[in-house]
Length: 364
Image (cartoon, rainbow, N blue to C red; front, top):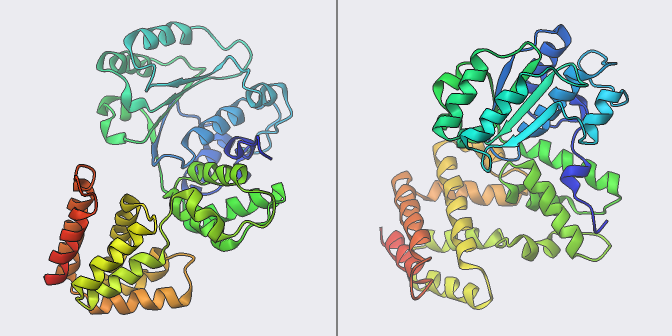
């Protein structure tokens, strides 16, 4: 178990195993099954949402020799070569480290030759927005006159930085941050497959800290397994490993702010710092919590979306706190905390910017 890299071991090998992004998966599967393959695709979205994984699945499916519908068989020579990472007709390039004109020119020369083994020569270009201007123009030339056997899949976390002429020649799919429920289901499946005994609350903490990135969530789970001894994994055991602030602390400080008790707020803050709470993580968690309170103030129906996996008592507390704030006051408090978050990085007394922000927020 200690040597596992979970996000690789449990990377989907079929579309059925792919969690989330149903709007993309369904469309891609329909194209593969109908044989109406585009020559260029643009996969855009948050990190860890499955862009490169789906690109590899696509490459395997279009080249599968015994495909059933859109699903690759994972048994034919083409599937096996791709699964083992030995298919020379599947080209993966990281534009972040290969962004120059020479690399794209080399690619342009190589794309002229027909596939040696697969039906399609598939190019997956990760972080495509980082190509230099000359390299992007060279890529555009290829996309304007692509050979019939070539398929280009450009993946990016910042689609707005893509050259419009390149984006316009691609069929674009936007990948959303994975839902809390989808990520929990995937981690539960991984844990069950590995025989890992873990609390649901612990999985909730892992998913919450991953911020919509399934790859990050699986990486954090892997980190926890490598650190903790065998046995049941509890939520309390992993907070320190994940660098998380106790979720009750932002709620407690928010309650003190509602009571407008400056002295108690400062004492609470300094007590927690003395206990070893990471100040940057504390500010981050406080900003995140007050942001959710602001959203609840605007629309209380968002409670289950903003606080997924939380207990009924925690949700009721958040709703009551939202009622006691004024929207304008919450906006001002968040602005003060954001400024304090930046200033703490350079302050000779690290907690001073947050102390000043709390005083001003409570006074107003």
